[in-house]
Length: 119
Image (cartoon, rainbow, N blue to C red; front, top):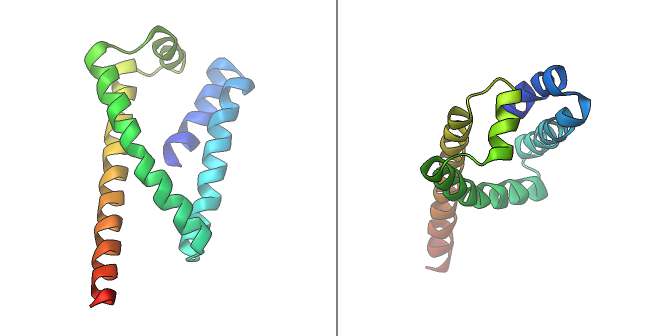
């Protein structure tokens, strides 16, 4: 949410409102999801957990991009935002790695709770 919120005005200012819309949508959606999680809303918790698990794809994609080079269109977009493409992808790799670790922790706790309940 913070990265999208930080990038939205940057994109708006440097490349126009249309380029900022995905960042605004992501920041808004994640803010609502954060509120649902804080309120222990079951749907919000489930969606958050699924999205955390999906971040493994972000880890794989970011690692691949760093290894093979940031693609032209993505590099161009990051350059227009004033961000070094490799730094942007590296930050995404860190973010996705942390999210994947949180998912692994949640999954481990859930499985342990299920095992205890079965005994």
